[in-house]
Length: 169
Image (cartoon, rainbow, N blue to C red; front, side, top):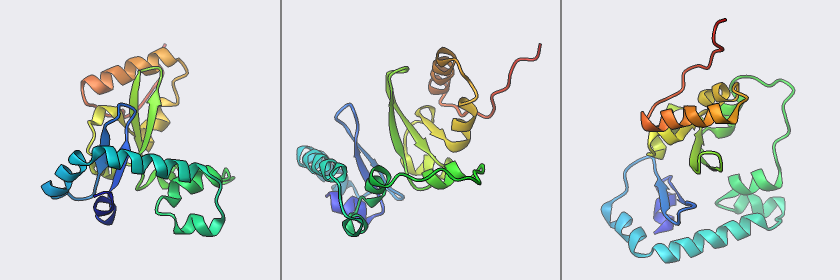
């Protein structure tokens, strides 16, 4: 079942809650979804073993053959900061990926993606997904409690963040 999702260009992720998150460019046939539900325990075991494999040091050759080389490469060979940092570098890093980030501050999993196209592929509520432009805006705020309050409003209203500006004095 997992290979069918991956062949369709999708990804299956194990959430902190124990649920599976399936993200695909196109809707999956109902038989595949039913199979994932029916064989959830086996899928969870397989995902767990893949995570253990990704955490183990590997040679560069085996990284290239690994189906999850993106995650493994990020762990083994982190990107070097670019001297010519530009506005699109965060988008380039995130494009085609969805990063699940558990926030202790808001006590839930948030998703980081490149842009609205990736938001649509993820099929999560918009209120818990942050695009690269939203991340840039939210990083302007230094007070964690204000960030948490903004997130609460974003989630309640299933909203996006357009800009963060200081109040005029």
